[in-house]
Length: 311
Image 1 (cartoon, helix red, strand yellow):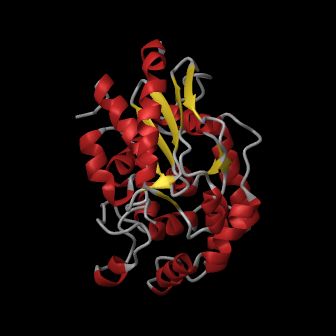
Image 2 (image 1 turned 60 degrees about the vertical axis):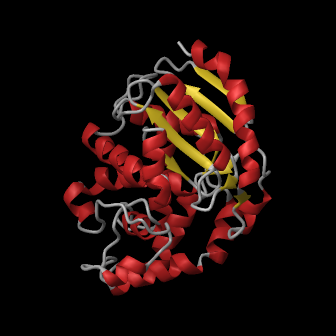
C-alpha cells in the first residue's frame, strides 16, 4: 500500500535535508543542543501496520511539545470537555509558544489554547493522580499504549536540563496560579515536574507515526482494532493540531500541507493523513518559529505530491 511513497521518499528526503542549513538546533535547553544539525528521518505507517522509513529513523529524541496533544486527550478522558475548557480556550494566539502576553491583556486570563506552554501546563494540572509520580505513571502508560511500546520512558538528562533552565515556564505557571487558572489546591512545582517529564519522553519517529495512526483513525488503533480514545476527543485534538500545532506558523503549514500536525523543539513532527497514515519526522534544525526546517519541507513536498490536503 505504501509502495508509491517508498519509491520516491529517499530522493525527497535528501532534497529536504538541505533545508537543515536554514535552521539551528534548539540551544535554550542544553541537552537539545547536542542533536546533529543535518539529521532527518521519517516513518510512515499504514492501517495494517505496514511501514516505510527513510533517512535517520532510529535517531532518539524527546517529544517536547508533541506530548501536549496526548496529555490533552488524557485530560479529556479524566475530566470531560467542560472542565478542560474552563481552564484553556480554543483559539490560536499568533504569539510565540512561551508567551505570557495575552494572559495579562485578555480577560479572563486563561491560556488561549492547550498547545501553547501556558495551556499545556494548565492541562497537565488536570491529569488525575494523588501524587506527581502517579500522574507521570498514568501519562507514560497512555503514551506507551498509543505508541505500542511498553518500554517508553522519559529521558532523565533532558528532564533535568529542562527543569534547571525553565525560568519562563515557571513564570507562566505562577502567573496561572495568580490568575486562578491553577486552583488553590494545586502545587505549581508538582505540576511543572509532571510537565517536564512528559515533554522529556524519549522516542523515535516510529513511535510518533504509530501514535499519529491512532489519531488518523479517530482514536482506534487500526493495527490491533483496539479503541483507545473517544472519537470526539480526537476530533478536538486534530482541530487544535491544524490551527495551533505548528506554533505561530500553523496557518502557513495548513495552507501548504493541509494536514494535522504537531511539532516540538527537539525537531520532531507528528503528522497524519486522516483515514490513511500516521507519520513521524525528526529534523533537529529549527526555523525562527520553532519548527524543523527540513521536516516541514519534507511534509509539504509529500502532501503536494499525494494530494493529502484536507482542503
